[in-house]
Amino acid sequence: MFLNKKRHIKLLADKFAYSITYDNESIVLSKSLNKIRITDKDKYNVLISYDTQTDNVNHIANEEDIIDTLYELLRHDNLELIQKKKGKPLTIKDYIDQEGLYFENKIKEVIQELTTRTNSSIILGGNRIEGEIYNKTIILVDNLMFLVLRH
Image (tube, rainbow, N blue to C red):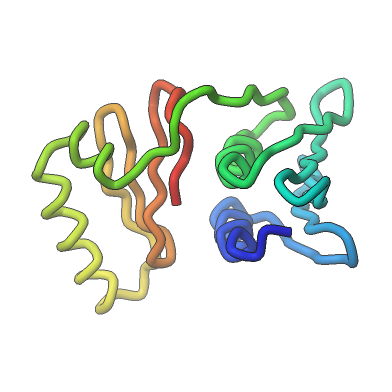
């Protein structure tokens, strides 16, 4: 498993109220609606298995796509097939370029604010790219669903 992704997988499971369990070969995220299993396929890819209304789907994701794919699966309240995005991963620079310098200053303010408050989630907002800080991790999502989630 991509060890640097496990923290982000746990963070998303927490954000969307999924339980997380580990076995010898997989990470399993569960909620009453769905069960998602993440298993190493090879050195560069993982197999993400999840349910839809009619079937169990196996989705292959490379290291760059794991978090984006999970975000799409976890945020939905219904069992639907997800499509792989063809865009590039989002960066903080993309967010600031799209949303303006105001958001660069806003991010700095919010990070400072997070050190003094108990709430671990702050919505930064945005027009095309939405920003959120969750447990001191910035999550960026493209409203047009083209660019890939960056954490």
